[in-house]
Length: 195
Image (cartoon, rainbow, N blue to C red; front, side, top):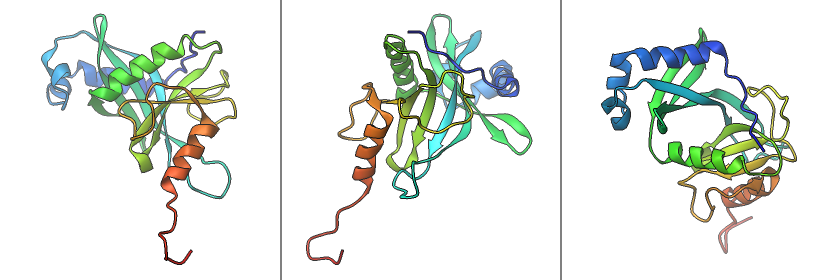
């Protein structure tokens, strides 16, 4: 089924378009591919970026917070980079360009998600405790992409490179994957040490 991509805030998109139109911003970006191409570049597939700060909390389900919007940047028919806008005290501002494995992995995960039998709203979920990013397929298609927590029917698709033992590009129920990740972060006491 098709994905229901949420609409990014207009100021976030404008900040990315302004950066793409700035020869200085593109040339000085730490993205070798982007700085060698002449464009025109097109931002597409805006995805809200949420962070899951503490997945081991015992205070109920883990909460997420919006940190930005990421756009895939196309040059003609291929994705070459990503651009991110972040929310500041003065509103939305361009943050950075990036390229590398997460860009191509996100593109592949989005393509795979379109073939799922149910429709989802795509988001990105960063889990800093594990240096992990997932494609978050949110089941509530009418939700504001900037808000909301993990739903019972949501799926998480780890992007490559994923932590050891976690298969990238495989959809997991959010609850199931978070249980595995929580277990991974909770250390068992050493033999002979007090519990």
